[in-house]
Length: 431
Image 1 (cartoon, rainbow, N blue to C red):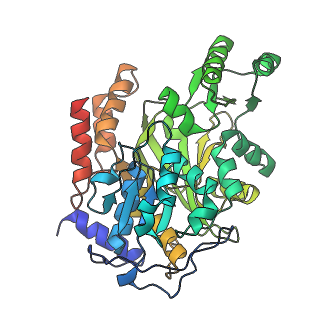
Image 2 (image 1 turned 90 degrees about the horizontal axis):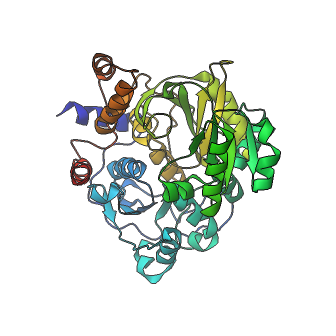
């Protein structure tokens, strides 16, 4: 048995789930849940390992792949719906459902899920793996709950935490440290606060997935007021709402995240933290190198933000340490699986198994600790990050090689599920 298989077996045992058969008979229909804020996991009888309801993953790329693997190894039949770049469509642990969408994937997904073509999925667990997926579940929760099993949720809180402005407002009300921020909806307001602004400044979208779809970047960094005005005008022309946020100084290795699952009573069931080593592109892109680490300074502020906002279910909150005062400042909060979910699971905190088990009524052994020092490395993107930093004189070849000379886990490649990595390499070569 390979070392990867051994490690994965130990991890599934540690989270209380033995490796089940890959072939699963279609699960029986379960009693449909009411569309309220309570968990939608009322079933006719407690399911057994051989009769688990299927799961439908809505949206996501790398995170959907990791969720499909975690649930597939439990013996759950997984279906995936998403955009063409989803890696779950190539996984042995998922069956891809092609839902054509022109410019409005949210409407296309909702139409499919509530239409006759999805009747065979009735009784499945529906899990959102993207911001668009969250918006679909919230917007059509009552109708979806008549067909699918849904996770515990406060729909109002989920929508508010998608919005960066209301996220910061909740944080301020809870006493959580944030960068300075300004709500700007009109150019007149921008001119009125001109003298208050500090630089560098981030022109940040209130809804990240809308901005990224339009501009292919997470935000705009402004060094002058003219930069701010140009960024604001570009966003306004695209009908994208933004806010202005003080840029927290420091490199990407100052970023750290907290992960948990909040039950219907508002109690966080786990406390997991990790740090980022590198992102690509630096200062803006997705993380390409993570490490699990105990960062106790994140737990208290994260719990206060969750209490204030009322968020239920999955939550991951990102902070950045400010060298000026040594405090961690809030960056964002997401009520779904993160791109680093595979690392979180490998370290002993299987959030996909936890969420699914609570929805369908399976007993769970809550993780009380996790393995620190585990690394998740994306070799292709981290090599680009190295080249970027070498051009800037920040990282030599020897320093980069030393930084990656550790036992690694990978976000996409697994010996037991190699085709997503093959698909990604093919895509890269085509580019």
